[in-house]
Amino acid sequence: MRDVELRHLTTLAAVADEGSFGRAAARLGYTQSTVSQQIAALEKAVGGAVFDRPGGPKPVRITPLGAVVLAHGRDLLARAQTMAAAVDRFKAGDGRVDIGTFQSVSNVILPPIVRSLRDEHPGCDIRLFEEETESPQVGELDLMFFDGRIDGDVEHLKLLDDPYLLVTRRGTFPDGPVPPARLDGAPMVAYPPICDQARVEQALARRGVQPRIVFRTAGNETVLSMVRAGMGSAILPRLAVDGADAGSDGSLSLHELRPGLRPREIFLLWQADRTHSPLAARAIEIALDVAGEIAERT
Image 1: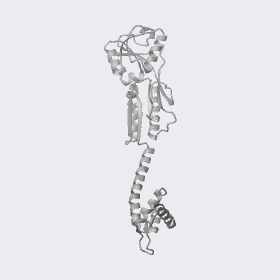
Image 2 (image 1 turned 30 degrees about the vertical axis):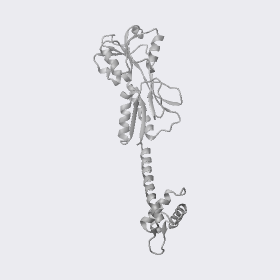
Image 3 (image 1 turned 60 degrees about the horizontal axis):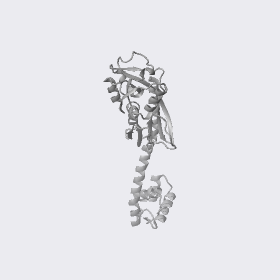
Image 4 (image 1 turned 90 degrees about the vertical axis):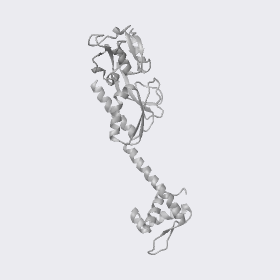
């Protein structure tokens, strides 16, 4: 049975439907001898005749063995057609993509990516996983957004630089740039000291600047709420500011730091040597376009 091929079953079904080798050949675009050869190969594989051949103008008749093979053969052919259709849909961009993300990207970069993918491929399955960690696990994810490079067998594609802004309650500082030295000892609301936040605090410390951290929280909105409430200022990346539309908030002021801090870097990561699906490859293309538009605006 290992020698049975789908083409043999296709020929079997055509002969059974048409009642003759000649008409089956015309339907399949074969010669009649090719049909005869394929039926002979099938009969050898299953160990018996699948058609009675009365000769002359009489139609061929399927044998009991042939009926068993045909019943299962039609099922296999249907499954093969289903698989072929699924492969075609996959190549066209349908299917599933698993994407890891974090807060700022989820608010600003990811929505246009998801919207574009769904517009282009309504049947696609997009699964998102958000985590704030300094040790991301790319694992079985197709793609992961992260604000830095990580060690290991991982490919890195830099999307953009995300500069830092000082966010204050209006009136805390005069309009315009603020020297980082003005933040030494000043109350500040901050993220937990992981990921790029740790690098920000280390950069300030190297300049002899040590703000007084009065509250830490991982939520962008919570940071801004505490700034509005007068708990202190905050140093936030541009994506976090834009994602919360803080620039239009009349109770807040945005300032450049001058001299500025090194911007955080936003990367798209994936497991090295991974073959991308068409959907994942398209997600990368859209991410680059979105990042380019953000870079032009900022």
